[in-house]
Image 1 (tube, rainbow, N blue to C red):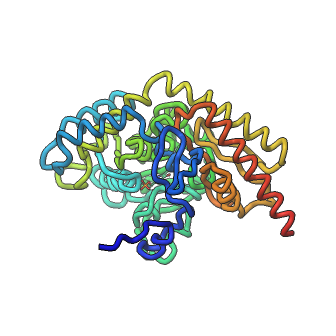
Image 2: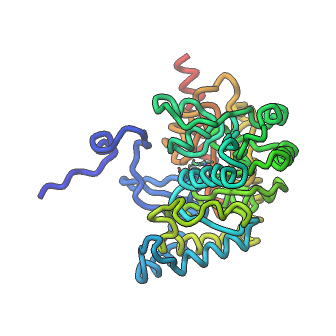
Image 3: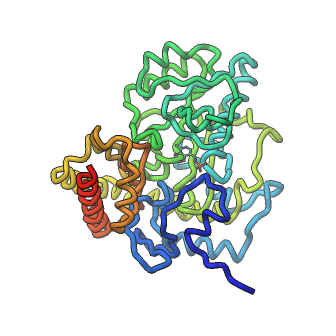
Length: 409
Ligand SMILES: Cc1ncc(COP(=O)(O)O)c(C=O)c1O
């Protein structure tokens, strides 16, 4: 039997081309460091796009996974299981929510949230009340319903017709929402900080006014905390920092620390509308996923980890400002906690991907949020030494881009 070499080139041969992964293939990770097939080491500021909140191979998560692997992997929802029940209890104890629906991804959690919002309005006010208002540049996932509620046309293009009854208004513009909302609105959907849209935090005053408008019109408020949740902002969930309580909230990404799991959380008021048989997911509440997520929540929902987020952010910002003092490359450094966005100055707009590639070559993994913003969503427990080392590499990468571009100009 011949063995095919497993290289990055194989990706182009055997995978659908919807992704264009980095040119190296990681094989191992520990904490905030990752090694590739050639044993080259990288500092990880990407954190699997806000997923690896405890870094790679965290002992508590590895132990939970191994322990559950010896006991019970899967049942489907014909039976419940202990890890799912324990996790649901922890999530409801730690948040505004009374009830939980488990699934396997953020898009799936949002799909459940939007369906529940429609069904709650249908059950209580009739079919006319079905309109969903969301925000320009928002990102809620890649299913047909979630790209439709998402505020970026490029993700819908070519997939039409998309579900109807959905409109978009500019984020942080309360007058625009006032003009659009009516008694036909069943839900307003927002991210507390727009992630993919460029790391744009909701203005707290705007967030409070959205809540009031929802109440005036009997519309439910849905918070998509897929990226902002599970400690990312220094709160367990970002709504706490805004001082606004939603009716429905979605969470995924960091919830499993790298194991696929998502959840839709809601109040007792709306939960009955997802009655028996109305919705489901084969893997939702999978015991392996819930056991790992329970360990992730137990580890993250502690004063040490949550308060450490602000300290680590301060080091990131200090280092980014140092880089900026040297290169004058950033227009603004924004975000909250360890959801960090550094917007490039106007002349570099459209070129964020160049910096990402140079960072990779210099040995640091970063992300972009759209074409103008460098994004970092590292482990919440990244050691200071790794932040400093990764920033030294980012500095080199930026120098390299600036030199090459000047040379090419
Ligand atoms: C705010 C937000 N919602 C939803 C999603 C979709 O999550 P998933 O890719 O797990 O379906 C993402 C993913 O980036 C996200 O950032």
